[in-house]
Length: 361
Image 1 (cartoon, one colour):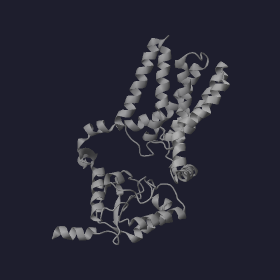
Image 2 (spheres, helix red, strand yellow):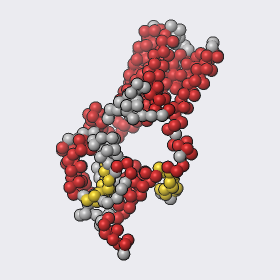
Image 3 (tube, one colour):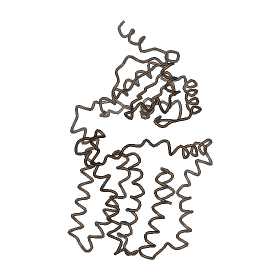
Image 4 (tube, one colour):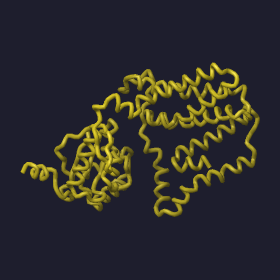
């Protein structure tokens, strides 16, 4: 069931779970000579189907969901943007500096090494009745599978999502050691906990707020006050002003290639379902997206062609970008992060120039 639920929340996780379960069963069988019983193996597949039942229900009960799901599966090899692994010997060449970058670089080396050492350490003394050892083996093999998630897009967010198995394996290993070598167990646990905290704290938003309060400003969202980075707040307020200036129609705002959170902030739906336009799409798909803009009478477009450090939008969605640049007019406003605002004179009820003139009067 856990495998099915994992696949429901994320296809990659489902693949990792199946691979980890198969490898763990094989490892235990080879090391301890105790292969899974036939009835246990026979129960695994129905359990996966039960866990995956919510997805199956959506496929059968929601019109178009199955086709969209299959299309997304076929598109999987194209959507992930590779990011170079910041190993210590080259992380400065990638523009990474400071202690957080050093710790992240160390984790890309230490995590795989830890899994290998944990499996080797438990190899000779493995006992199937020792639950701590079973957890060490299972978590280590699961962690090896999740390393694909970290290394395929090598930045802190993906690395953090891939490392929970390491924490479980490390904790179980300390628990196993505690029965015979309490001193080593305590030292190992303190070292693991300290390294995790040291790696996590530099990226903790609350800590960064207290360290650099001048980088934040108050912003009202849904009647509540939030502390938001000044650059993000400026972008949100500019988007809200342009959206209101041009009629506030549902689907009339477009943010590309990223910033999907702006749709929720503005209480509007995206003109089309693609929210991250960083992977190449076919001409037919782009033409469908353009048709959606026309149908929704989209009047405002927020574009950041350098969102990922490259002019990728001109490579992935050239037809859509050309349509916006041809039919929309640039707003004379300096925005953070290299973003630019565009308005469609045909669909926009009040252009930015008219709004500026009215303020002068």
